[in-house]
Length: 100
Image 1 (cartoon, rainbow, N blue to C red):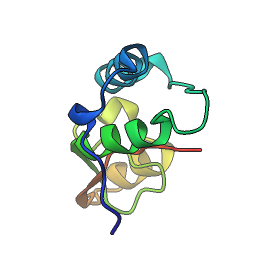
Image 2: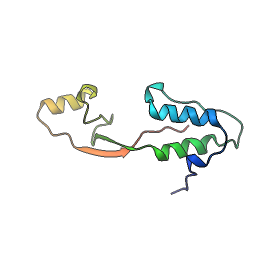
Image 3: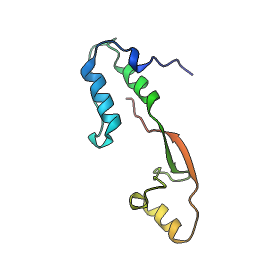
Image 4: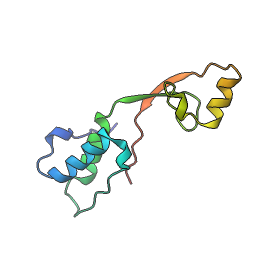
């Protein structure tokens, strides 16, 4: 497993760090596009923040990772399974994070 540089140890890049933190606090923002010269800690900051994100509870075998505590957001498959009386197994997994 690679060593991840701590987010709090990144010096400078305040706008980038603020954008990453805001997106972590409110995912409705929809993501952050970070661009810049090579060696300016873009990937380092993104990986460091991803390491800080909490694990999330999901329906274990749901391909969409439905939130077991919020039935109003369930996919069709989870709703149908629950309607049939199935117990939906719960698991925890890392918060989804895409680093392109």
